[in-house]
Image 1 (cartoon, rainbow, N blue to C red):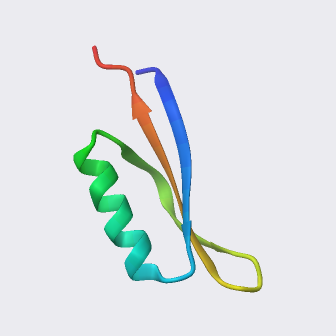
Image 2 (image 1 turned 90 degrees about the vertical axis):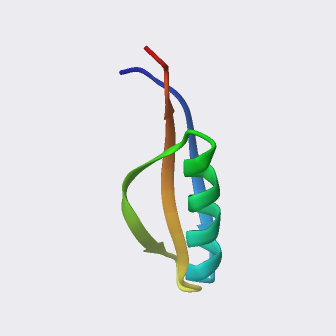
Image 3 (image 1 turned 45 degrees about the horizontal axis):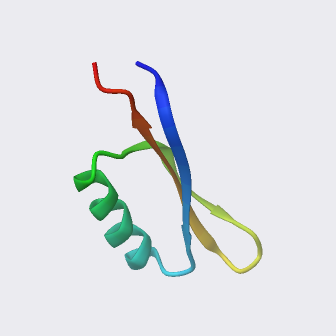
Length: 54
C-alpha cells in the first residue's frame, strides 16, 4: 500500500486528541504507531496516514 497523505495531530489534552483521531479514522485515516508525548508542555501527538485505495 502506498501512503498518499500524512499528518501529525497534536493536543495538550488527551481527550481532544482521542476525539480528533476518531473523527479522522471515520474519514479514512489510520493511526501510524502509538501516541507520544512531546515538549515540556506535554503535547500528546499521533501520526495519521491515508493509504491509496487498491
